Length: 260
Image (cartoon, rainbow, N blue to C red; front, side, top):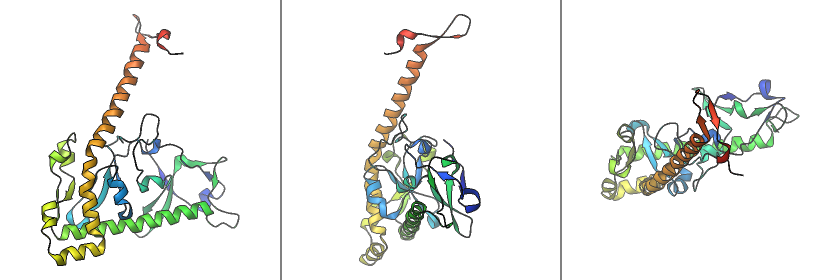
């Protein structure tokens, strides 16, 4: 489900309302997402964490699917079927987008309403308490995301980030696997006491261990992917059995196959 984010403003949203999400249809096509440093332990217990990008600008990401456009944790019922929901999804329908100079609060346009929902602003024209809470949450996330980038940069500076071994990510297309980076356990264990202490001070050591441990969740990601694929195939087979083409090319419905 494509999203279209627009900046929140009194001019455009002063008299309008917004709706909270009640399912995860909006995340159905998101297969990789930012990870905040503060949540790495929880993310690592539910899904793989990897680094992407050049060494001087590494980004910390969680893998939620094996291919672009397919989130293995969102079922056909649009509900979340994983053990943990990444924080950057929980901010929906809001997110910060950068103008290059500042971060701007934006909302998914599909969540804007004219009647039912919550106000963007109070009677005095200030952000409503609910929106203020959202802004605070997103600000904390952004600070923690930047902390993750700094910690990743520290790991890269000491030569601790290497391409993920293909055997660790079975089922992933080779060209996708080649873009994934992880911590080199042997290089980490060979660190000097001084370097180890410097990484511990920035939270990079904690990040390193969580990233390595998170790859133990690869089988769980494969299981979610298979379960979702099998369910989709079963639905497709049932639909094919119900809707039978007639001799004239028109579809006929086999009503006997509908369960009562």
